[in-house]
View 1: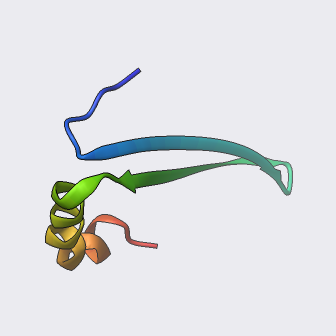
View 2 (view 1 turned 45 degrees about the vertical axis):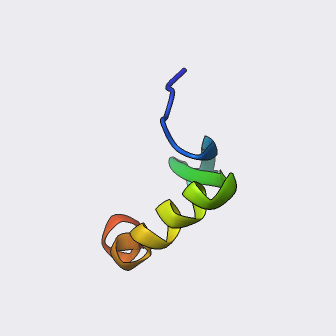
Length: 55
């Protein structure tokens, strides 16, 4: 298990689905903010989100 030094809790989820005789791996990250430091962290990273989480 990995640990973080963030203000809040984080979950990283992995799903494997069968698609047309192939497997597809999907990862999802969830973050629950805690307090003012969590909000500051979130708003601080908002401008770079499109570069980190490209679809």
